[in-house]
Image (cartoon, rainbow, N blue to C red; front, top):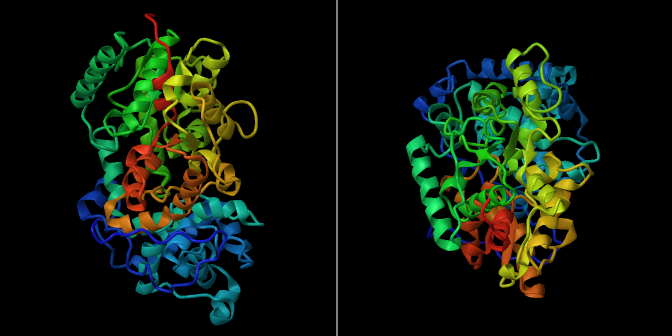
Amino acid sequence: MADITAPAYRTIPIIPALKPGSMEGKGPFVASDKLNEALGFPGQLVEDWHDRAIAKMGDLLSKYRSLKVFMDACVHCGACSDKCHYFIGTQDPKNMPVARQDLLRSVYRRYFTLPGKLFPKLVGARDLTREVLDEWYNYFNQCSECRRCSVFCPYGIDTAEITMAAREILDTVGYGQKYSNEIIGKVHKIGNNLGLPGPALRDTLEGLEEDVKDATGIDVRFPMDVKGAEVLLVTPSADFFAEPHIDSLIGYAKVFHATGTSWTLSSMSSEAGNFGMFIGNYDQLRTIAMRIRQAALELGVKRIVVGECGHAWRVAYSFWNTLTGVGDGADPNDRFAQMLQKQLDHRYKQPAHICEFTWDMIQDERLTFDKTANDKYIITFHDSCNVARGSRMGDLPGGQFEIPRNIIKAVANNFVEMAPNTTREQTFCCGGGGGLLTDDLLDLRVKGALPRMEVLQQTVDEHGVNFMATICAICKAQFTKVMPIYGFDRKMVGGVHQLVSNAIQLGQK
């Protein structure tokens, strides 16, 4: 920590000067035998890694037509080059999206295209060597899969999908990343990313009930494993104890209390996050998601609501229907998916984001607020990348941008936007997403946060902003870690439902 310093702010806009090799060999810790084998991957790099890696690439190309299109479509126009926060912060040219993609694309050309097989040097094709494999590990673990570069790509190449494919190949040959594989193992074994057992969760929730009672004089419940509840809330496990996350959990509970909604958490499925997406592995993605279906069926709930977590909402919104049967498009041959379809109340969105739930309650005038409770704040909003570019909310296009802002404006008097080319679909990643929120990558995380910190500083200077709201657990954890390095107070970041919690007017229900 003592050696980590923040890069100097730039004069915007500016294209970074190149520092070739500046992030070479700075990838994350490699997963141990135990962590890899717990997920069904080889414990360590297998002897025939070359053949297995090429075979896996062929398998992915045959399964996912989009991946083959992305391998073929790039014309090196350079539109994405300066759009990546990691390239801006590190200035390493291999962190340009186009260059990072080419680490995989060059091998694809060598083994899967005729020109690459006949004239490799003429078409930029490379053999897969150990050095190339190490490059994959290093640089594909310096991508947060935020997809900002894809917004600017004229061909719509989804760089995140390429990163996911590379990480899946690496796991297949026993070259997995420690942080992500360890997290996934905890979910399989205990039920959440942080490895919090059921008794610890119950103690935490009882403590929150006492805290809210002391603060408000009102009995707000934080129920767990209540059969027959209307709503199953699935939220990131950081909401149970981390700051500022826990303040949003208090906000959810107050909303449910004030609207008289019966709800429950699940000790078995106490995690909304799904790192299976980060490593690009469908089986892990589905296995983690299935815990939520099991909890919903066992508890008999009518609605499933997802808390403030960016990638969790992307997985829920975009994949839960085919993974688990939650939402439209459930497999008609999956008996349990059909059971869940019959159980859920389809008058409501399935699943729903907690912001959709709260905004619906505000529009129905079932919540009242004292906005002056947030008058000490001048608030801005950071769009989280997986919500902004991988999902939607509400019934209108752009609902994922408007609904959180509408809630903030309903509960607070002072709101200002950051620069328009850094918000909504063009938002910058916090620098810690995509399975990179680990301290062995702290240098990368600090540098990757540079573009957002620059714009935040601009908003502070021009408007006196002193609170940045966001609806992502990773963003909250990342910002509280790196903001002090840039000279900001770590308490300057918090959730939208933290603001709701401050302003909501409670009564006994």
